[in-house]
Image 1 (tube, rainbow, N blue to C red):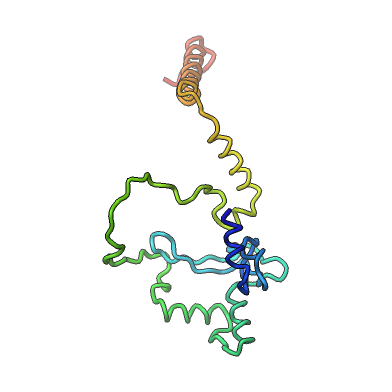
Image 2 (cartoon, rainbow, N blue to C red; image 1 turned 45 degrees about the vertical axis):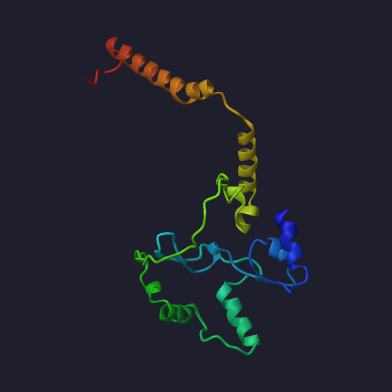
Length: 199
């Protein structure tokens, strides 16, 4: 449903897709600029704590794919608006000048609280989860057979309604009985002298 909505929105636009694994944007694109995946390029990331982290490539991008910054840099030359960096070190110097906290790797960056949001009334409708399928939230996951299997498994699990007592026996009772049986057997063997008594 959402895929068709996006494609309709993009139908009359000139679409440039830069990325990897393909997705709705790639299917609707007039031009595709193949980029490297996050495992195939050096990167600077900020995690949910606000810590700046550096990533290094684990492998090389396939085919004609390139690191994103090199694509943008080459495109800037073609358009006659050359960007002021020719390598990753020069790009990072530009980043550090614009955002000095990018130099503080793995340090927690304090945030200043300020007013946000707009006043309003709380509705009576129940909260809804914004993500209906956690395993398909990005292009890499949507292209993954493993994530597709996770989706199938979670759908099947949601359709089953396990009996509470069955859960109790599987999770608590049987493991406890098994541990007691093993302990009792070990005690009997020790008592009969077949194993050295550790006590």
